[in-house]
Image (tube, rainbow, N blue to C red; front, side, top):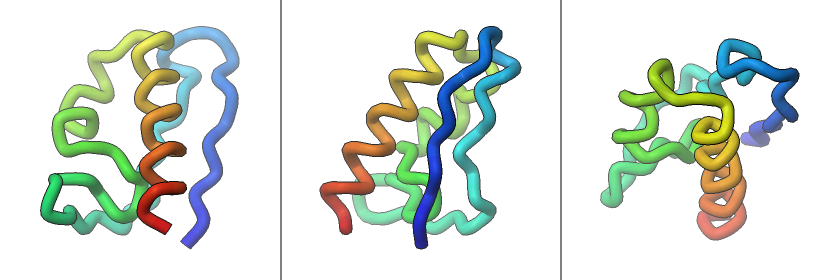
Length: 67
């Protein structure tokens, strides 16, 4: 599965969730669909643009490590 992460357009609402509706957590509570930690998934709606971008960066790193 390939997940594409997009650059934000401005506000936190413009940063789309990386969720691909394929939720399955591994032993470290990382979703194997979007590569977010369960805590990041739960907090997503409350995060500002900067925090969402940081999460997306972490997702990319996790995806590279796990594939």
